[in-house]
Length: 389
Ligand SMILES: Cc1ncc(COP(=O)(O)O)c(C=O)c1O
Image (cartoon, rainbow, N blue to C red; front, side):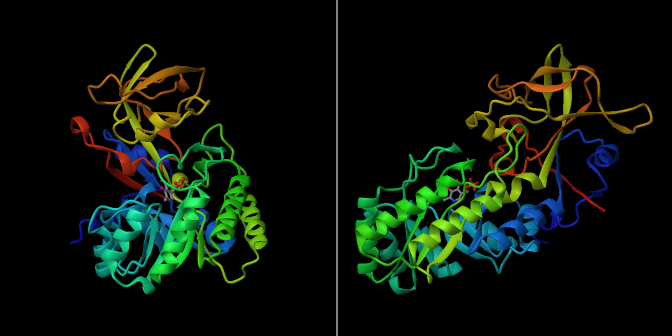
């Protein structure tokens, strides 16, 4: 049996309340919403005028990969040999693209020879040389030079570690073309990017780079960054992004140019919610069975203004699950590990009646949650159920 086969037949419930009633989970429980996976994938596949690569780092779990495959996603942005292997293991027909600009020695060779990967990113001459030496067949490669696109508008910037300025990128494009590989450009405007305009600005930077280099690129990969709706954050609809991108790309005047995007967060965030249990309430403190070292790891890096507004759920004397109502108040929510840093960075707003043994349901927990959980202290959230009839 495949290691991931145990996720093929998850228990199924009509609603989160029914799941809590049925399972009375004492471990964190991920609830999968297939219609949400399908809905957002369709928006991208219908609305974006090019290949939609799912950035597997956002959630490489077999459940998420299979949901996206079922929704029609065929391309995957993979950032390491390990990610390529986990995608191929679950989806042997998946088309993987190796979109990290700095690779461990030997990984490009293995990706190329064992998995047929031909798209790679570089942002330095040394990585370009390494890539060419490892793969040895430049004509079959599309090499994407990564640009800095530090434009504001995103919650997490993605340009301080990788990317180069147009002048340097132009030289690299020259190197790619000279080596006989197919020159391409890419950038990442930053994750949870609330400004569609950032993409248009970055496409202009790509345009400037092309002019500087005098080289015709074959493909433009506009990266990830598309936002999802978190509590208190209503991003513009995706069609605003797609429309703005289309206008900016049309302005390039290159009808044959292949377009790609690499959404991670946008494709998986809404598709999974998380049930945690209150192991103990002490005054205004809740000690939960999941925290910063589990599903909430990314919360350390996000600076939202909003408090968390999850739902509180209790089981009544007959074992029926009910959403708690009544006056709400802020709680400090701790995770299960012994570390004092294991506390959510912002208050959690819940009804004052919440008590030990009750549940807290967090929505939009599909992105950068499952992928970065750790087994620190012996806690590892891994309960799963599907919601739907
Ligand atoms: C190269 C690359 N592409 C795509 C993504 C996905 O970004 P997002 O989840 O913001 O869409 C990332 C995120 O780190 C990335 O580094």
